[in-house]
Image 1 (cartoon, rainbow, N blue to C red):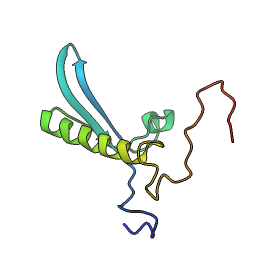
Image 2 (spheres, rainbow, N blue to C red):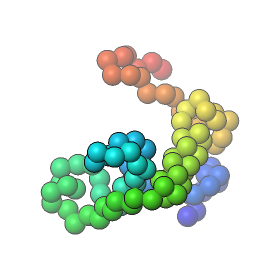
Image 3 (cartoon, helix red, strand yellow):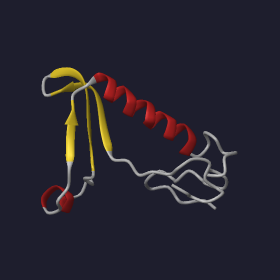
Image 4 (cartoon, helix red, strand yellow):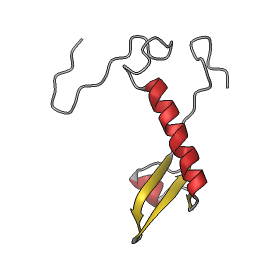
Length: 99
């Protein structure tokens, strides 16, 4: 993916849920991933794919991916990267947005 000179690595859009805890009555590491959005039409109308993967190593890989993206993308974590320069943290609900 060529995102231009400001991107230091490819940008992506991932959709997954990684559970490390009690699911369906048992402690487990489970990952759900696929094309589905978390919306009414995606759940009821669209032709989407969503799979459940019951494998600890897959869960751990998705978790590592999430933490890598979070550490680069979250404003304040790496503000000196080209992707984060000038990005401000959004206010919490009910707070007035500041300049």
